[in-house]
Every structure is written in structure tokens, then in C-alpha cells.
Image (cartoon, rainbow, N blue to C red):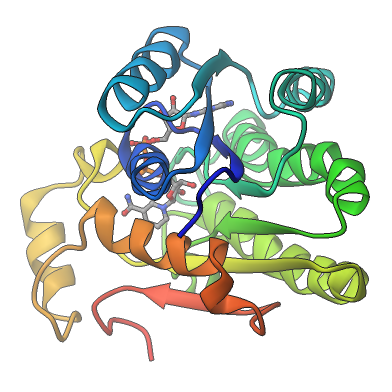
Length: 246
Ligand SMILES: NC(=O)c1ccc[n+]([C@@H]2O[C@H](COP(=O)([O-])OP(=O)(O)OC[C@H]3O[C@@H](n4cnc5c(N)ncnc54)[C@H](O)[C@@H]3O)[C@@H](O)[C@H]2O)c1
């Protein structure tokens, strides 16, 4: 479905990002795995090259650093010649009630979750315009739609991503660049590993499908948004949450 396309996926050393990279590679896409962890980005790229015989490159990048992201995009262009798909997936949580939240907890989450989306989208924009099109897929969260006590920083970053997605869809639709967001519910990755069991059990009461999502559930929608199948879809926020938020 993505034969000989080139995708740049942030935070793809593990979790949802890795699952998206694997799904794309399986479809013949060359993938650039960027992650703050050098070890996991290089390992992920190696295993995808071996498994799917596509070109995969792992690059340590801090997506909250503007210069690093511009250098990353320049390197991808130098080595692959184009960027067809950007998946802005890197993200963190630093949960706290507002009463206790420090300015550092606020800023770090905004920098990594939201500023990164500006940095990376800006870095791929000219190459995509030159290529007469492209796909930008932003990983938001249902928390950005519904809010969540203890996550005001995270919710603000994800709501920001949604506003950004719709604006870019409007700015560059006529240039063939489609921009959509995915809003996952609770997905079985290291990000939610530290949540208490009771919290998860209570949460599942709100999920009609009565289970957590798997990274592949998100990757399937990312594949749809990257492929020709979604040629008339832009500015949308697709929830992958087992029906939790309707
Ligand atoms: N797991 C969930 O329940 C869930 C729900 C909704 C949205 N999401 C979103 O999905 C995305 C992926 O989350 P996940 O569950 O796979 O988490 P994860 O913690 O397993 O993976 C996140 C990856 O991002 C990388 N990363 C962190 N900071 C970075 C930086 N500054 N630069 C580059 N890479 C960085 C990490 O090293 C890690 O590999 C995040 O944006 C998250 O907010 C997750």
C-alpha cells in the first residue's frame, strides 16, 4: 500500500510509534525512526530492515529541539530524496494536579508533545511542497478532546495538536498535503504501565469494548491515513478508543 514511499516517524523506538513504523515497513515503505533514545531508534531500524527488506534508518533526535529536527529532515532528504509521510508521534506525560504542577512539568510536556509538532511539520513542509503533496499524521489523544483531571498539561498539548492539525489541513490542502490527527484512548504501552490497576479497571467501565487498545489498533488507522485510501480525508480527528468518547 505504501511501496517506495518514505516516512519519518517520531518517537518510534517503541510503543505506538514502533508499531506504526512496522505497519508501514510491511507495506513496502522506507522508514526513518527518530527517537530521543539512540539505542532504541537504531535497534528498531535494524529489525525492520531485516524483517521487511526496506530501507530503515534510526536517528537520535530530540523533537523538542528546533535545530535538531531541521537537521533530521535535511538528512532524510539527502539520504532518501523525499519525505512522503510524517507521523508526529513522540509524546510524554508528567501528570499532576494543577495545584502541585511545576512550571517545569508544564513546559516539558508542551515542548515535547506540542512544540515538536510545529518543529517537525515545518521541517518537512518545503520537501512536501516540492514533491507536490504529502501526509502529516499527528498523534493526539482523547484527553485532548475531553480533558482529564491531573493531566492539564498533557490535555492542553493534545488539544493544541488538534487545532494545529485543522489549520495545516486548511493551509496546505490545495497543495496536496493532507493533515489529520488520531486520538487514541488508553493503549497498552509503557506510557500507561505506571497507572494503578484500580484506575484501569474503572476506566474500562467507560469503554464499550471493555479492553485496552493495542498499538496496532492505532497503527491500522495511521496506515489508512498514509495510504491512497484516505485521499479525500483531511483535517479530521479519528478516535481509536474502543468507543470511550463518542
Ligand atoms: N498509550 C496511550 O494510552 C496513549 C493514549 C493516547 C495518546 N498516546 C500518544 O501516543 C504517542 C506514543 O505514546 P506511547 O504510548 O507509544 O508511549 P511510549 O512512552 O511507549 O513511547 C513514546 C516514545 O517517544 C519517545 N520520546 C520521548 N521524548 C522524545 C523526544 N523529546 N524526542 C524524540 N522522541 C521522544 C520515547 O523515547 C518513546 O520511544 C504519544 O504522543 C502519546 O501521547 C498514547
